[in-house]
Figure 1 (cartoon, protein in one colour):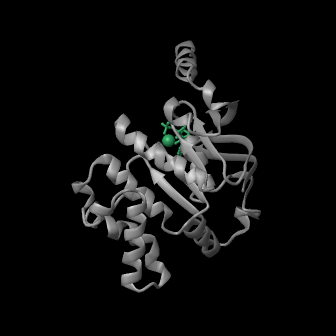
Figure 2 (cartoon, protein in one colour; figure 1 turned 120 degrees about the horizontal axis):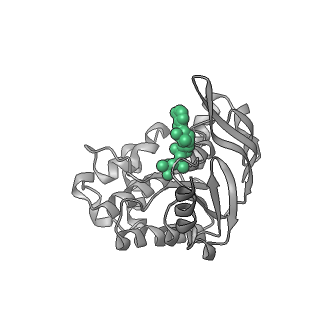
Figure 3 (cartoon, rainbow, N blue to C red; figure 1 turned 180 degrees about the horizontal axis):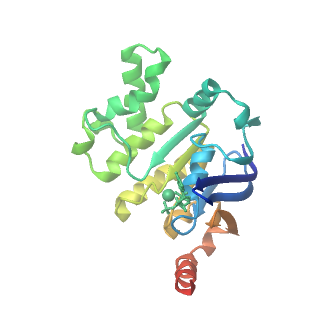
Length: 241
Ligand SMILES: Nc1ncnc2c1ncn2[C@@H]1O[C@H](COP(=O)(O)OP(=O)(O)OP(=O)(O)O)[C@@H](O)[C@H]1O
Ligand SMILES: [Mg+2]
């Protein structure tokens, strides 16, 4: 599903070059749930943006479903983003003046569906995340966990094969976070491919495997049972600098 070969994403800042990603080679199979961990600034969001075709490598190859993303034109790339990839962010990214249903409908607007059909599909998607009784609530009238479930319903409305999540439980307490993790487990069981960026070992334990980024490189490939000590490892690295 995802094939990265020697992917580098460099930023030029005056005379200096920052390599947010540095020679990343990795394959993620269809149906896998992979967690990305690593210290702040290690390139996690950059990697997710590349995977989501929101950002392009400065060198190296990214193939998604067998196609070289760099060879797609802008129309094809935006089609891939809309149809094949769902995004979930730490801060939800909902439109404040729209109710839950209208937020979930947004990706359907370009599809030429009749308004009633759009509303019906969005309602169904909200039911699937346990929000049948919240469809006409605006984001400000929802809890954090409910907002994130609206965002997940929106990410899934086009039925993408790939779900990308950047700290999806980062703003939630453990009960609300637990509901999001349950939802992600269900999606994983349905066969979605999921890539989750997280600082939280509890979240990482829901993945099949864990990639640890340090300075833009995959420094460790871990089993989810082995991530508990990572926070301490990063602490030691920081102290040693
Ligand atoms: N637009 C940019 N211009 C220059 N450097 C950038 C830019 N975006 C990111 N970087 C740098 O690339 C590196 C990786 O950033 P990234 O946002 O991917 O980190 P992260 O692992 O997601 O961190 P965090 O855990 O804090 O979210 C950082 O050193 C950052 O300063
Ligand atoms: Mg980040």
